[in-house]
Length: 459
Image (cartoon, rainbow, N blue to C red; front, side):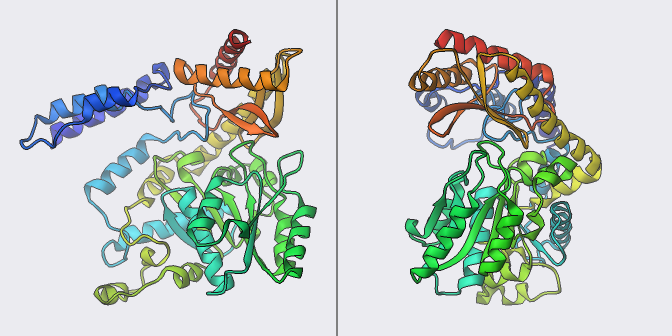
């Protein structure tokens, strides 16, 4: 067991030390991988060192490194070694955190971590929540709670509202919860990709006049496309006046509250009824750890608590928190240990400095892009995201879309950096998400030069 452990640790240390020299995007086609891995289950055991060697040679060498300093796509997940070791401990002890009786100390650690997140986000006591797999499950959990608390069993004529920039997980959650697609109203965004308040008010009033029941607004606390933040205070006022639930999707942006810049951008987030956030993004945790916070944890328990006969004695034990009462999961891994250990080991100021670095790097990237007329900045740096496109003079939008898509495809194939496209107002845009604290200004400059060469080739 010790020999196996040292082999694994050596692999992880080598990965950390050699990461910046590795290809960001390395993948093999499905047929090649099938030829490597598809076989009948072996009936006899094999040498574990050979199995680990195979994993290193063929599995971990054929994945994108989302922790790489030049991984700028989607939302990077920088991770950290302390949290990786915490996950190894949680798995090694095989801790169950569904009910307090089976993991009393683990449950209390998660209560503590949730309260840390509550404080960071500015929510008042007694707000609390539950750790889930990620933003998608957090949004689903929050909207299920909103439906139960606000509507009970009468939700067939209810309506929800979100902008055209809202993450796709919200639409998926609405579908899973049994709402018709027509019950989710998509409100257009303004020139800054924030929800249009006048359009929101008009839609709510129109639905009320038609005998429908508006019950929830989903706001963006940092979109994945551009880092845009909806006017949270104004939305809170609308929800208060209309007696509606206020949910904010902060899966990407909420952690920026650690900085003064983030606090200014997210003013009003403390007024939400529910909030999703993802520590495996901007709090540098390994996958998976998402979170949903609500103003009153009893709302979660009203929504999810069940009491089967075989758990009655277990669930009534002591005064600990049974997290199986707060989400769809009964079986839960010990997600909170890694965040607890890393905050204890590094201190919150280290996280604050790391988040500030991500914000600063996005501004640096924007400055670099604006210094060269071949680039057009489509959205300025916002919460660590800047969107732009290669824009040589005299080319049509159709041609520009083709060129920028080709730049992205070259990135994916080449492996130097990972930059992909999104679509903004029918324009194919490139975007840099700079939240990895390992990312240097040199990484950003080198990547922009790489993209420029790719653009020139595609033109």
